[in-house]
Length: 317
Image (tube, rainbow, N blue to C red):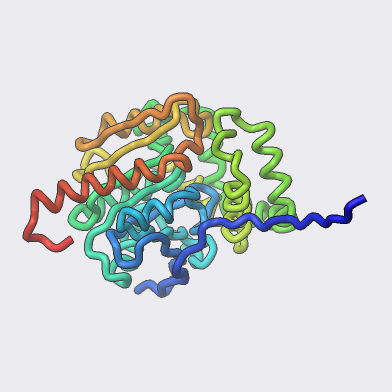
């Protein structure tokens, strides 16, 4: 019989061309990774909940480089390289992004958010209208509190989120203890989610590189425990500290109509509320549809940026 040996091939995921953290003016560190075309048009990318700076569509870095775009994937406080900020909110994060943009030499930029990163896109657009060229929300969370009047409000969901908000400190501590020994099991846990989770999301997870990216990201993102993801959930339960109707920046929503985690109604409400918006419904796709949309998202950002520069040719970009 012939003798042969089998060698397991390592699955590669996109790596940043640079990564690190910035010491902010209030003393906290803000972690980030840079992908795509260094020095190109800047797009700040906000991960979901939970998630970290490695949570990017697989084709986003190459698509960005081909389009002259630099993606800066930024971690929220308490995630990865970012230090915990106990009293942070959507608006304070927008100011952190402004500082990071200054440090990297970007006066204007786009913002993209996946799922739990969606509200941070809108906060940046609201707080930094002279700097944010365009915002994109991929299956993003909408207002969930009762007084919002939004169809995304759900009494059961709000009850759960309110409970998380009230008990966020002990819950975060407890889950941190529970999650740490499970970190080596992230791969089989991912396989179970793919097997038993929504079938509409399975096309996203078919590539082994996608599994490798998610597993790498979740291990890095939970290194400091679960306080930050739990705090994110608690913010979703509260009244937003800004009115989406006041946003003057163009915002584009992409949302799967089969999303069972963040229903389409979240984006529908926001698209009807914000003055300058578009909504693309991704038919038959679920919550993770945004991971299949990077080229079209970056194309849309480029179109809006080109229109802005054509309208204001004498202003620096």
